Amino acid sequence: MPIDLPGAALGGPIAVSALGPGETASPATREGIVIGRGLRPPGPVALDARRMGDGTIRIGWIRRSRSGWAWLDGAEVPLDEDREFYRLTLAVGETDWIIERSAAGFDYPPGEQPPGLLAGTQPLTVSVVQLGRFGASQPTSQTFSL
Image (cartoon, rainbow, N blue to C red; front, top):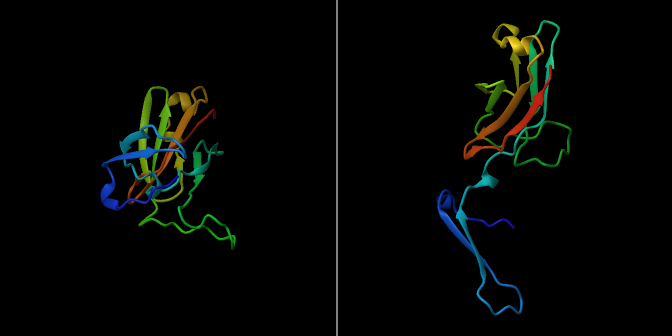
């Protein structure tokens, strides 16, 4: 059940107690930190990676938004953030690369790919988060054998 809290509560402690009808014992209490998950953008969906004819790996995804859940007119949902911005983590073997993008997609050129990925002998793990004014979304991740 969502609880509306002021923005100043972010990062602070919270305690929630519950007592059911007819119960007379002490209420069950749970303590935690206000993380503001509902203020952050939802994670991207439909993550995809395909090798193109020239060896480039084209990575794409669909962004989501906290507003505009109903797709009424067939147009793209409103951004509901100050700007569109993503952080990709690309992993091959024990090596990670972090790339920041202002659009939903990335072309990974063959000249920048490690030999195992270029040869198709190592998989590529892609993780994407959307960055919003209150933090990052939950990551969307997938491993691709290309």
